[in-house]
Every structure is written in structure tokens, then in C-alpha cells.
Image (cartoon, rainbow, N blue to C red; front, side, top):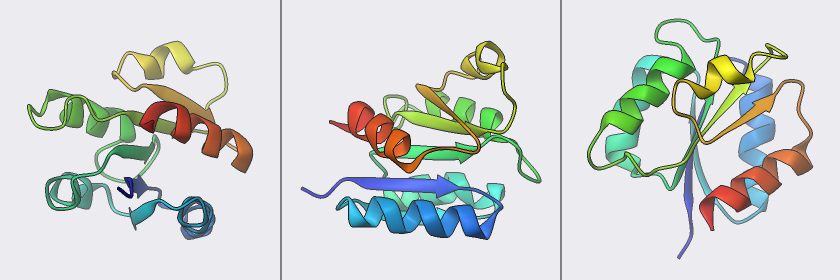
Length: 119
């Protein structure tokens, strides 16, 4: 069965690259640039993994991660946080994410982390 991934990033170029890369890797991908759409999309799309940009307008990626992890139906869904903040991994892990990818990131690293968390 095809695995579903939800991606949040307010940078359209990053959304496009991540979407294209993960689609090429045979994942079904939904993406948004708006943090307020994440929880409704989680409910509707039922993703196998969520990737959240930490720094977005509105609710940040860490807070969204906590909301996903607190939800009884989605608490076991792996969450990756994208962050441009180098050396802040310990702070980001406190939100309950399963992995962190520092920006700028390597697409090979992205695919490896996704595959490790989703399989």
C-alpha cells in the first residue's frame, strides 16, 4: 500500500522540491504552506508521516507536532521537523518529533529519514 506524507513549509520552492522528491519515491504527498491547515489535513488525509517546517506563520512546527502527538488517533505517526536553526536539536526534540532535518538539507538525507521512520 502506498504511504502518505503530509508536508508543511511556507517556502513554495521547498514544498515543490520535497513534493517532487517524495512523489518520485512512490509516496502520496499532500503539502501546505499554512500551519492552520495542518490538523484538518491530518484528519482528512490520515498520513503515515508528517514533515513540519519549524518556523512558519501562525502555529509553529513544534506546537503542531505536539498537537499531532497528543491526538489519540495520530500519536504514533512519525513527525520530522525542518529547521534552519543549527544546534537547536535538543530544543526541537522536546516537542516530541521523531527526527530533525536541518536546512539547507540534502534530498538523500530526507529520503533516508523518511524511509527509516515509515517502514
